[in-house]
Image (cartoon, rainbow, N blue to C red; front, top):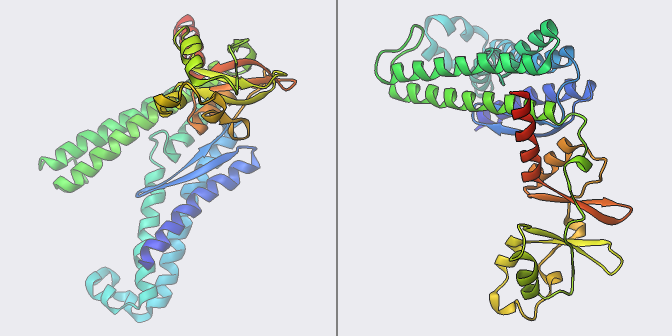
Length: 343
């Protein structure tokens, strides 16, 4: 348990190193997600320069390598005379260690392995981001650098998959030992890396296409609105059945936003309540809503929709509803511009 706690703390330190360096360059880290084999820092904005990308990417592996060396050094001091057995008889060496030295003897090499693994130039691993920083500096084009790093990342992912298949079938590539478990684990890592590399490039492409695009250019202007005292049945008959809209801002008698009602809200309401229950009883109140303004950047609106897992945002100007920006509208805009650019 102690070794697991120290290893988990090491992963947190790895990701915090990314976060601290990122903050220096104005990069906002929204959250850190921990996995069995590491962690991922979710950032709100891409690095502003190749140097920012380089230092933020390299900070994590350097932190892991530093911790690995430090743990081994401290563990060696705690081991005392038993340290001479490390190379000649590892089993006897671990048996002679105390609890603290044993923990450090395990997590030290694991941190070194974590640091070296993350330096593999398989985007979006840290090493892949270092590669993207170098390509960005050479080419001067962030999207082209991302595409190049993503291609290298997918190539490395397929090498992992083929290596895992070989190991599982008893014919591993040089440097790997045969074994079904090891092979399946390598296949899993390869599939994960391949998907991550593709998604990272798609995210960069979206950021590039939406750069400088405001919500006003994409939103649906003057969307149909309803009042809170409207019966649910009337909403269904007069609005849902007569249009392709699936969400309606709910307004007061002055046109101010008080909430939003969606098709899913109607579905959750018992049908016997449709005649007497009002929209206000099933809507999401404005206090719980994420909204946008016409000048909000479209990419920021998309991030908000993804973060809140909603399909639309009411657009507010001077306390009145002036539009509705939907995730599908953003996607349609991206598709049209992607095809026009031949991307």
